[in-house]
Image 1 (cartoon, helix red, strand yellow):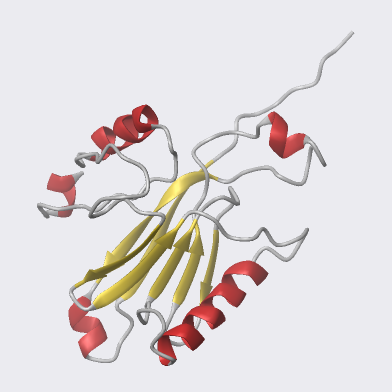
Image 2 (spheres, one colour):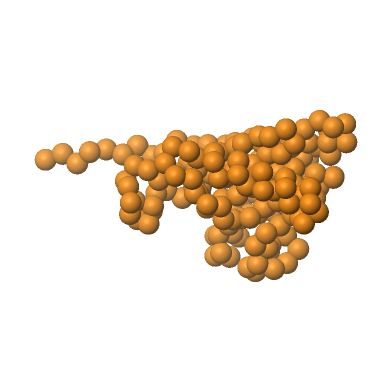
Length: 175
């Protein structure tokens, strides 16, 4: 993937606490894994990563919006981020990236993107405990394209590309 992007460094952030899983995904992307949880230069519980003047805030968890209102949580997170950034309590993030919910959602404000990443796993027993239908995941990934020059021109410096795959077909059991 590094040769496809024409870059030497591709930061990759994974939510799995299991190093073997991280290592397998990161090798597939051509990235160098950091084996450790919660510490290190690119591996933290919360990471504010600045690339060419564009700040991306990464964290695994986000509250899951109820039912049909999937964009409520990232929208609310973007508003809290804007307030904290204006007060100087946190870095002014141009993009917020969250996981945990297992579905893709992208909310865009005038100066901020808030994204919930799709999942890398199918529905689990835990996801089915309240409803078989409610927690059907989106399988895939996102690519963030960062353009510091665009931000300096007061244009959008973040472009979000989603990569989504179809869920496997399920059939009925016939007697």
